[in-house]
Amino acid sequence: MSRRHPVALAMLMILWVAAASAADGVVRIAFVGDVMLAESERTGEVAAEGGDPFAHVRGLLATADLRVANFESSAGTQGRPDAEKPFSFRTAQPALRVFASVFEIAGLANNHAGDFGREDFAETLSALQAAGVQTFGGGRDLKTAHRALMIERKGVRTALLGYLDFFPRWFAATPGGAGVAWLDTDQAALDIARARRDGADVVLVVPHWGVEHEPRAHDRQRAAARALLAAGADAVIGGHPHVVQDHEIHKGKPVLYSLGNFVFDGFEDEDNNTGWVVFADIDWRGVVSVTTHVVKIDAAGSPVPDPGRAGPCWQRGEAAMSPCTKARP
Image 1 (tube, rainbow, N blue to C red):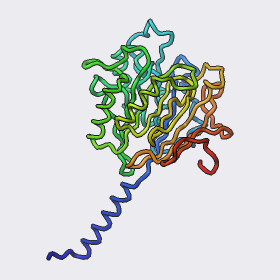
Image 2 (cartoon, one colour):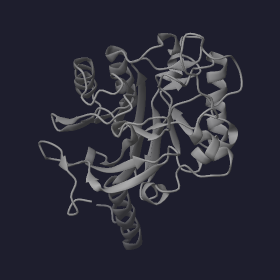
Image 3 (tube, one colour):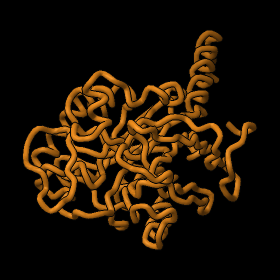
Image 4 (cartoon, one colour):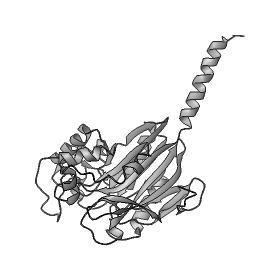
């Protein structure tokens, strides 16, 4: 019968406790909707002039371990605007640096990331990376566009997948061309499975979908959300409609169909100028809780916390989301 030295046993115990603590860690990830910093828009002008469109929400976002935003623009210098689109957006370097000072992660599966063509989209990937921002939902070819971004914090490995489900379809990556990941639920199921094989504890899917200005998700969104959850996603957190949409808990997993705008000018209606900051607390088993903070977008397109309005909250085990209260910050 072998004997272990007391010191060795003590060291093993310390390592076991440390590993258990890491595995039991809870990571807070902040998600926001559309961030528009194009040089043609007031929000981009403010950043280029040395202003800070995020000034009122930096403190709020700082409470998260990671911050994720939909980067609704190109950040390259090549190509020409898409002649078939009414708006093409490009973010200049000063505004890109401001974005990077807040967000570590940018979702690129949206209908403006490819406004200036595939080569420009590839340059956008490089520009964000050079600024210190990791990306998901797009890549230099089909395979990389559909590969999850893997992030590890506090012993929890989280995979982020993003998909576009809104025209133009040509934005989709090809085997040899840069572009975004297109939402096909069969392919997404394979992407989720691969993320799990690569070691993901949690898989979060961020689709760009729905009808603009509609406060409720349509049947296509709902069917796709259920398919993504059935394939193994732990939550679905969407955007694109320029308004917040409804939410649900499906078989114990949260779905928020749209977070609305976050930094965006040019809208007059209150619903277009209302957005959500969603904090998803996760551990190795999935989503622990969801907490939402409502923001009001001011005349310059900048978000300002609106503590008088309650967004949805949820904790693991609850059957539905309910309005956040002071007892559930």
